[in-house]
Length: 346
Image (tube, rainbow, N blue to C red; front, side, top):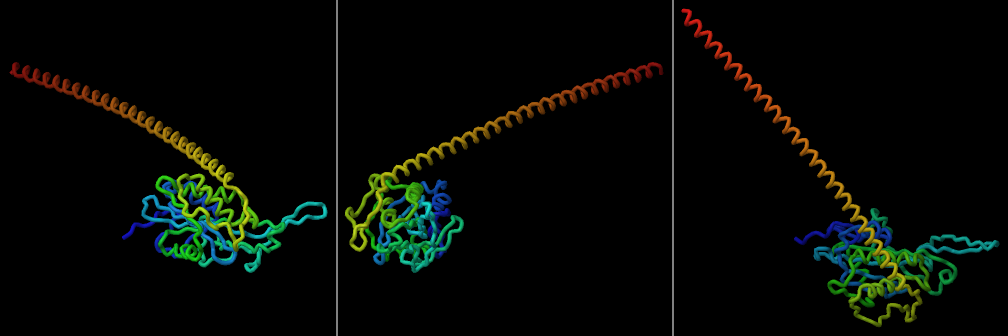
């Protein structure tokens, strides 16, 4: 029987679970990955860039991540979709008012069409339903105008080749693979480092705009940042068409250098935090060791005192016994004298 997948949330699902799990990148990072030391030993071996072949050709990334024992593989999909529209209106005094509009599913600027499968809510990590992240039409005046949309940056995960991963694998098979990064041994990031990169990328541009920070921006930024941060990654197709929509080049904001800088700063902060935690734990252990030693010294002192008391009691008892023996000896001598005197008188 094959060994069971690791039992920690965020990457692997247990055998028998029928659907994958989905969460926002922020909650996934903060609650499942950031402080989990096991994710430092889960290595990313492959990153695939996918583009849907219909509609607005939504783009997403798929990661293959090995378990610490190198027996199991996690499939993780990261993607960006758009949320509700925030309309900016100015009143007569020149003040700007922002109104959030929750659009219906059939709206031309809706970015939350359902996926091929329905992911269960990962309530422990604040999960949300996975959108298919369909980009709005380029002709939409609402999007091309003053509207601002909050980005929905999500991850979905499951143990590969299990019932739970079937929906994610089907999503990839229905899309076109644009290009792929492979990481030779000792080159690729850990799941912990990947999660940091996804998190800082999401936080770098938290709004979705069709002309600069759409799903293509998210995928390209993460993909190029991986190449920049982890030298030695091997890309199979150099000149791909991932940045095209209907044969038209998609505009996006250049953010790779800034995201790499934020990633390095985040990893430095995490390392310092880990070092502080280690020092605090070491100090606590030293204090506990000192307390144990003090208790041991106190116990030894108490033991010696008990031994002294016991020795003194034994000496007292021996002296009493000796005195009693001497007293008994005198009594025997006296008795013998009395017996001798009586015999002489007779």
